Every structure is written in C-alpha cells, then in structure tokens.
Image (cartoon, rainbow, N blue to C red; front, side, top):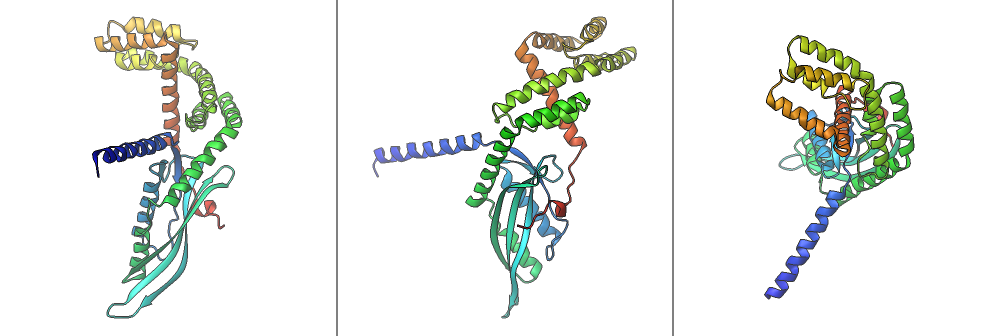
Length: 317
C-alpha cells in the first residue's frame, strides 16, 4: 500500500472520528430516574444490582441515570422468562432464556417515549447462576440500545418544545404562590439545547428570581446584622453579596458593607469589588442570577429524593 493511499485512509478515519465526536457532543443529556423492582422471581440481590448497574452504564452517553434522581422521565426494566431447564451429563447444567425490556416513560402523563427488548440466555450449575450469566450477557453497546436512547432523546426534546408555554405558565403560578424553589426546579429541568424555549425559560427564571430575592432581602439583612453583631464579618459579607441589585434593600446592604469594609480581609474586599464590577455588567449579572437559580433548583432536588413504586410505574404492553 503506497503512502498516498495511507494518507487518504488516515484522512477518512479522522473525518469519521470527528463526525462521531460532533454527534455525541450534540446529544442532549437528560436525567432519568431509574425505577427497579425490589425483587424478581429467581433473581438474587447480586443479579438485581448487576442489572441496575448495567442500565445506568448504558445511559452514560445520553444522560444521567440513577435511583432517587428527580425527573419526570423514568426508565425501568421488565423481565419476561421464556424457558428454563437443565441438561444431564457429567455435570448438570441449568439454562435460562429471558427477555429484558427497557421503557422510558413520562410520569406526568404516563406516556411511554421509547422501548427496547433483547433476548438473553445463560447457563450455570444453578438457576441463579444461569440468570446471573443472562445479565452478564446484556450488551450495553448494542446498536439497538443506542437507537432506544436516541429515540427517547428526540421525543423528549419534542415534548419540551411543544409544552414550553405550559411549563412556563406552571412555573409562573408557582412563583406567585411563593414556591420559588419548586418553580426554579421546574424551569431548570429544561436543557439549554431546547431552543427557543430555553431563552424563554431563562427570562422567566430571572423574573421569578427578582421576586424571590426581593421577598427574602429583609431576612437576609437581619441575618447579616446578626453576624456583624457577633463580629463574623466574613459570613455577613457572604450574606449581603446574595442581595440582587434590583431588590428593595440593596441600598441598605451597601450601607452595611460600608460599615464592615475595614474589618474584612483584603481578599474579601477584592472579591466584593469584583462582584460590583459584575453587577455593573448586565451579561455578568445574568450569569450570577442563573448560577444562583441553578443552585436553588439543585438544593430542591436534593431535598426531595424521588421514590417511585415500581408496580405503579410498570406497564405490560
């Protein structure tokens, strides 16, 4: 093979790899709540745990998956046994054939967005070991599994696009009810790749955030004053730094900071000056607000781990 042919093949390979990387980078990563049965006839706890781990691994290129995660989209397995038996010989071997099905479903409207089924077979000295070998044979790099997640991603994107207005309306209602953390959690569940919905989501998030900080600014001031009384100036500065420039008590927060500026370290003073520069820059200010909103949403999710009953989620097709 001459050098010219080698160069052409090399260029083609680089092109294919680049395209594959671009495809992966463009994939929208969703969060899936994994719902597992507490037991399956014939399965040991080890086999159940192995199945759970393999499902989580299979999602890795397309999203985040785990038990207890907060998401409207759940993924769950269904096991259907086909046949089982044993063969006689020098050593008796048990064999098992089963179908493993995976479903991705929206909890809110109980609609299945994607499904996948594969047949697994295994042998072992016991039925349990045969089932364990079935699970070991579950190939997480199965192209049909990739199609399963790709189809789900596509349909979820369409779902968010079609329901953007209703999601924003629900968040707006939650904000008016002063359920700010829940409103932020709902809005931040929309991936930034869902455009132009995401731009509307950010606008609504910031609007609700301004109401949120305005409502809480007086309590923040009181807490900061308490920290100042205890000479905990660093903590007071941290609290005062969370008060948004649009809130009613922003000027009061500035006065308090003026009082303690000789008591804070040079490093803290520098951080406060940097923050002031960001306040003066609308783009940087928006980034600060979005970061705060994201942290509030994250804290809300962590405070409300999702526990779903498998048999309430399970659907027999």
